[in-house]
Image (cartoon, rainbow, N blue to C red; front, side):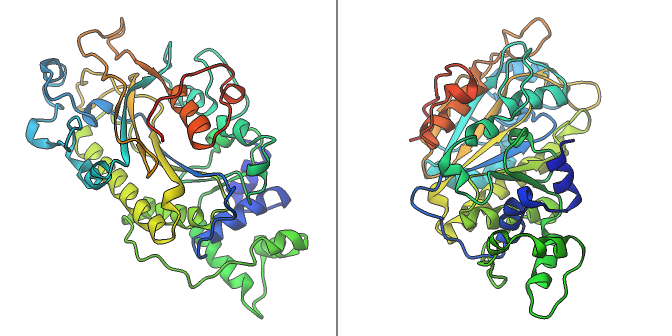
Length: 390
């Protein structure tokens, strides 16, 4: 664990992490104003940790091979939703229909990379660093994105992660912080900023740092609230904090992690609940950020370290697989379907799906179309962007 991550995970803040932490932990309480017209657009990464089963997410209900491979887990036609012009989707994703109807939702199919790795740790490292399967990079792809870029360095922090302690795509030097309990820090911060209330511990340290850092939190307004209703539970709270952080306009990127997708057994109910939470969270983010005038500058991307095997296992679940599906949401998304669904009749030698689109083409789209940056420096070679962004 890096020193900066230890500091963030412990809730202690030094000169490097306070700028990110003050904007991040307290932003859920502040009214939103984008820093300036030149501020980078906002990227929200929604990580589906554990390996999302893409075949029961974007569902090939018209392919008989799907039912042959999954006699128990296959979703029947009455258990899917069909938005106008979209492939069949798990019924838990029904709340997304308004985004699809407004052309603010894209389905990216067959996403993966050559020589896929089926280890959770290694595969997510590949996604976080944008490396080849046999290549080991020390920095996250967003760390390389913000490096030496004046537009990003002018922000309060490079990024904030919620729902997990690791920095993921911000690892290796970004001004980023992992917030395991932003609500607790926000409560402490309100006490620390109140007149006549003595600060203790970590908050005392925050108030002792140099005056320019103290001033970074001067615009915090504890009376700000959202009208939007967020999903219940711990992840819903994280989504609400992410919305607050995003609304400040002081960070260019966030990563939200939703765990639980490693569905080796009893998948049906677990997966349905997780996908429902994904859909409700995206809808809530859209509503909350629209309240504060930030949605127009927001892109949400879902991703997972891998998909699941096409053939169900004996425990009512699926094992680690390869190619998967991603979703993109936002006003600047070209609504539609991109990439081909992996063939269930042309599996690889291990019985897994063959990917058709390298995930780094998605990153190239973010870099070139979303942030108007050259992608080769970050991705280390040319990947043709997908056309899902305007």
